[in-house]
Image (cartoon, rainbow, N blue to C red; front, top):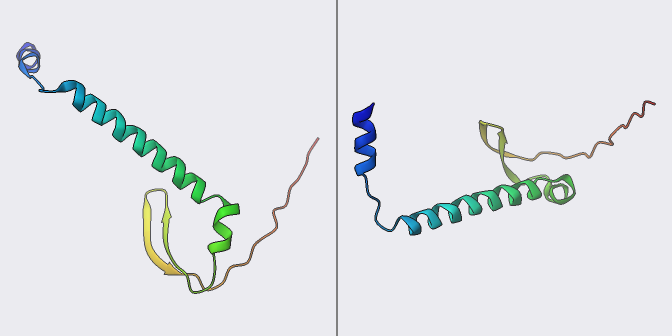
Length: 84
């Protein structure tokens, strides 16, 4: 363990501040891309594009089903149950 600590302490990164700045920018860009994706998949923005014949990519969490064609789209009414 001590040997590894000595090796790590010997490592020197030139322009470490620039590397850190780049890393923070990449993190911010990834965060903004995720926010944009979440905005895009909101139903109010997505439904106008669900037209028959449109090519879409189907994903569910970590599963990627590839591309498919929208055959038909029918908007369902959401049932709201209120319990008091």
